Length: 115
Image (cartoon, rainbow, N blue to C red; front, side):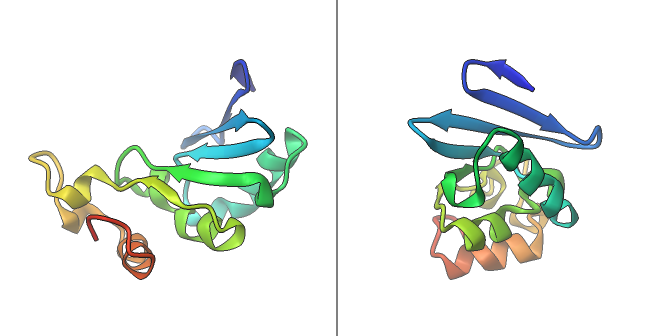
């Protein structure tokens, strides 16, 4: 559903993610659980785009419903992460141990700050 000009909200009622269109490219805001990649692909296709249109990934915080598909979206699209996870900066509210291991390892491989 388009909630603002070129901002699309998707949900499966357990988690949400957003696709933001800008000049033919997409930014993904949060990513959902890893097992829902096909649902993510369908959401991209529903707005007339493909995975190669994803230019960037932003994660708001380190819950599995926000980080789960990030490594796969990165691998499939080549999109960089624009912001590292706050939890991985050891803020007072989060600790590195709260980050999903597969996400931390993926970030380490790509030399993202904070991992």
